[in-house]
Image (cartoon, rainbow, N blue to C red; front, side, top):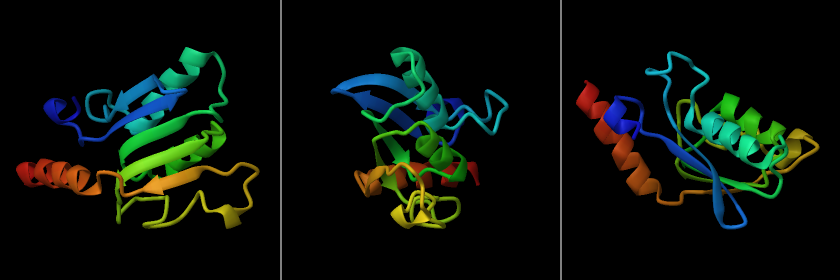
Length: 134
Protein backbone atom coordinates (compact mmCIF):
# COMPACT_ATOMS: atom_id res chain seq x y z
CA UNK A 1 0.00 0.00 0.00
CA UNK A 2 2.70 2.48 0.97
CA UNK A 3 4.36 2.12 -2.44
CA UNK A 4 1.15 3.05 -4.24
CA UNK A 5 0.74 6.07 -1.97
CA UNK A 6 4.26 7.34 -2.79
CA UNK A 7 5.37 6.46 0.73
CA UNK A 8 8.58 4.63 1.59
CA UNK A 9 7.41 1.00 1.19
CA UNK A 10 7.66 -0.32 4.72
CA UNK A 11 4.97 -2.53 6.18
CA UNK A 12 4.49 -4.07 9.61
CA UNK A 13 2.16 -6.48 11.37
CA UNK A 14 1.84 -7.48 15.00
CA UNK A 15 0.96 -11.14 15.55
CA UNK A 16 -0.24 -12.80 18.74
CA UNK A 17 -1.19 -16.47 18.94
CA UNK A 18 -0.98 -16.72 15.15
CA UNK A 19 -3.48 -13.88 14.60
CA UNK A 20 -2.65 -10.47 13.15
CA UNK A 21 -3.76 -7.92 15.75
CA UNK A 22 -2.16 -4.83 14.25
CA UNK A 23 -1.14 -3.59 10.80
CA UNK A 24 0.64 -0.54 9.55
CA UNK A 25 2.47 0.91 6.60
CA UNK A 26 4.33 4.17 6.35
CA UNK A 27 2.06 7.20 6.05
CA UNK A 28 4.63 9.88 6.89
CA UNK A 29 3.89 11.89 3.73
CA UNK A 30 0.13 11.42 3.49
CA UNK A 31 -0.36 11.78 7.23
CA UNK A 32 2.13 14.66 7.42
CA UNK A 33 3.73 13.24 10.55
CA UNK A 34 7.19 11.84 11.21
CA UNK A 35 5.50 9.57 13.78
CA UNK A 36 3.60 7.60 11.14
CA UNK A 37 6.08 4.78 10.69
CA UNK A 38 4.67 1.35 9.90
CA UNK A 39 5.78 -0.04 13.27
CA UNK A 40 4.16 2.77 15.26
CA UNK A 41 0.84 2.35 13.46
CA UNK A 42 0.89 -1.43 13.83
CA UNK A 43 1.68 -1.14 17.55
CA UNK A 44 -1.14 1.37 18.06
CA UNK A 45 -3.65 -0.90 16.32
CA UNK A 46 -2.43 -3.93 18.29
CA UNK A 47 -2.77 -2.22 21.67
CA UNK A 48 -6.27 -1.11 20.74
CA UNK A 49 -7.15 -4.66 19.67
CA UNK A 50 -6.05 -6.20 22.97
CA UNK A 51 -7.10 -3.29 25.18
CA UNK A 52 -3.70 -3.01 26.85
CA UNK A 53 -0.36 -1.35 26.15
CA UNK A 54 1.74 -4.41 27.00
CA UNK A 55 2.39 -6.71 24.04
CA UNK A 56 4.83 -9.14 25.67
CA UNK A 57 3.19 -12.13 24.02
CA UNK A 58 3.23 -10.64 20.51
CA UNK A 59 5.77 -10.37 17.68
CA UNK A 60 6.19 -7.46 15.29
CA UNK A 61 7.17 -8.34 11.71
CA UNK A 62 8.48 -5.46 9.60
CA UNK A 63 10.21 -5.20 6.22
CA UNK A 64 12.91 -2.76 7.38
CA UNK A 65 15.01 -2.55 10.53
CA UNK A 66 13.33 -0.19 13.01
CA UNK A 67 14.69 3.31 13.67
CA UNK A 68 15.38 4.72 17.16
CA UNK A 69 11.81 5.94 17.61
CA UNK A 70 10.32 2.59 16.66
CA UNK A 71 12.89 0.61 18.68
CA UNK A 72 11.94 2.70 21.71
CA UNK A 73 8.25 2.04 21.12
CA UNK A 74 8.95 -1.69 20.82
CA UNK A 75 10.79 -1.67 24.13
CA UNK A 76 8.14 0.42 25.88
CA UNK A 77 5.31 -1.77 24.56
CA UNK A 78 7.15 -4.79 26.00
CA UNK A 79 6.85 -6.52 22.62
CA UNK A 80 7.96 -10.13 22.88
CA UNK A 81 9.72 -10.36 19.54
CA UNK A 82 10.84 -8.51 16.46
CA UNK A 83 11.39 -10.01 13.03
CA UNK A 84 12.69 -7.71 10.31
CA UNK A 85 13.89 -7.96 6.74
CA UNK A 86 16.38 -5.46 5.36
CA UNK A 87 18.95 -3.68 7.48
CA UNK A 88 18.95 0.12 7.46
CA UNK A 89 22.53 1.44 7.49
CA UNK A 90 21.35 5.06 7.82
CA UNK A 91 18.77 4.87 10.60
CA UNK A 92 18.67 1.25 11.79
CA UNK A 93 18.56 1.00 15.58
CA UNK A 94 18.63 -2.79 15.94
CA UNK A 95 22.24 -3.45 15.05
CA UNK A 96 23.06 -1.49 11.92
CA UNK A 97 23.62 2.10 13.00
CA UNK A 98 23.18 1.48 16.71
CA UNK A 99 21.75 -1.35 18.80
CA UNK A 100 19.14 0.23 21.03
CA UNK A 101 17.65 -3.13 22.01
CA UNK A 102 20.93 -4.87 22.89
CA UNK A 103 20.77 -6.98 26.06
CA UNK A 104 23.73 -5.09 27.54
CA UNK A 105 21.81 -1.79 27.46
CA UNK A 106 20.37 -2.67 30.87
CA UNK A 107 16.68 -2.44 29.98
CA UNK A 108 14.19 -4.23 32.21
CA UNK A 109 12.76 -5.97 29.14
CA UNK A 110 14.40 -8.01 26.41
CA UNK A 111 13.10 -8.20 22.83
CA UNK A 112 13.90 -11.39 20.93
CA UNK A 113 15.16 -10.30 17.51
CA UNK A 114 15.44 -12.19 14.23
CA UNK A 115 16.87 -10.21 11.33
CA UNK A 116 17.32 -10.84 7.63
CA UNK A 117 13.98 -12.54 6.93
CA UNK A 118 13.20 -11.84 3.25
CA UNK A 119 15.95 -9.20 3.40
CA UNK A 120 16.78 -9.35 -0.32
CA UNK A 121 13.15 -8.90 -1.34
CA UNK A 122 12.64 -6.06 1.12
CA UNK A 123 15.84 -4.30 0.03
CA UNK A 124 14.92 -4.68 -3.65
CA UNK A 125 11.55 -3.03 -3.05
CA UNK A 126 13.22 -0.13 -1.26
CA UNK A 127 15.87 0.26 -4.00
CA UNK A 128 13.14 0.28 -6.66
CA UNK A 129 11.20 2.96 -4.77
CA UNK A 130 14.18 5.26 -4.27
CA UNK A 131 15.54 4.82 -7.80
CA UNK A 132 12.13 5.81 -9.20
CA UNK A 133 12.23 8.99 -7.09
CA UNK A 134 15.63 10.15 -8.36
